[in-house]
Image 1 (tube, rainbow over the protein chains, first blue to last red):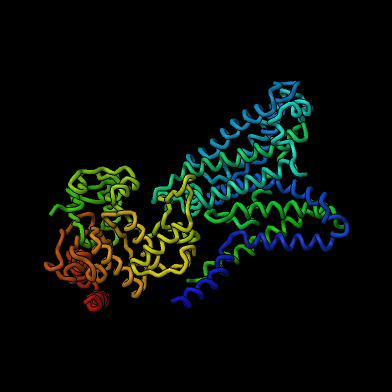
Image 2 (image 1 turned 30 degrees about the vertical axis):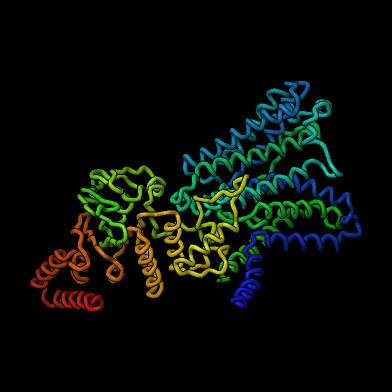
Length: 342
Length: 282
């Protein structure tokens, strides 16, 4: 009997590894790191400055991707998060700018958060109410938010950029949560770390997390066993909107200005990071940690390419190739994990 | 002895369509009650009415002596009526233990967290009780065979305190050996004191485990029979709708008079077919 168990143990370590959705992204991270370490190690890729750079780029994407991954595991998309960053950034800027409303930045962030949670609720409510694919509903919301943002910003300011927030940010101690830095790393990196850990805990260690898997894997089956699918999905849409607001607050308060074009394209980068991290487009499978590693890979490539002799214009080709490679690898690994039988 | 569940003159209409008409049925604890019928006989509508998906248009459902009216499957589940659907309500990419507890996760400790070790242990133990030895409750359900998935679903219902277990065609998609394993769990559930409603159109499976049989045809009940009072062939004949087969024979007879040669061949073929089916079921 004892020998029997030992045999199982050794088999199960390999299988356990195969069962991790983030396995592919970890392999990808190692490959990407080695590639730049070898080709650009001499040009400063391995310096602290470079590390700081790509961590910061990865952090902003990672905060978003962690939430987007959770939503994707729940079986839905949110293409409006990019526009949400733009409109949330401008709202924070207009509310806190001395030229306009002149509220403390922390209060401005709070008000903006309430607004974006409302948008997230509308997204989720529309998807559940109409039964339309969230791809379409949030695509529409993406255009609506982008249009509203430009329209209102020009109406109020005659410009598309709101700036001059440095002084009010400096006076508000709470704003340091978004604009400050600790241990040589900007606030965004710390936010990224905390958001990833908390959301991963929620996914893996709470009932809600189990419902997310269920709602994404098979909503009817989940409903049959008593999972409140509607509530779960609407909460997830509110979560992605909140994550977009955090990113907007970090961008706006650390630079001291907001541009209506902020966040454009981030919605697809977040999907890319989630997919590289092992999320299934059809829902029910994936990992928050994987999405964060996916963000780290994208950040590393975007910043690492600067240190090589390759023209940065080629960045997107690399990203595209990586998405394709990651999906094929993840698909293969997932099939493999289902083959490994008891 | 009062029945666990009793249906009194239950009818269900969908617009002009009569799906069920005046169904009477009594299910007792510790028995396997087989619900037989051909496709379209109303078996699915009947169990959906019992499990809270539909409300009956007429008639009453009495559970443990009390009249009940369920507005959702969840409500029926909370009262102890668990249904294992044909499509199983299982997520292939999710682990066995997560599937086992989906919708009823235990919350442990001050943070009320989901405890992976606890759920894995309970799932392993519960499956061992019904005779499935799984090495790793963390493996995806997709690695299990169809029969094993049925068994996990049954074990789940039993663990969460089901008093009535409704099984919708649990053996129809399975091979012979796997079906036998599932039938074994049906009997085990019965010996643990559950009332089992076993829906099938396979008389052999029903006969192997059933104590009582209710036969539906075109939304109406032919009645309920104890095993001692009926025979497999009788049930089969009722399921096929004996009268309809007779009508078919008359029709074929008429055709043969108009076109004796080809109709004769056809009738011969049909007769042979029926004979073969009867032979294989005997």
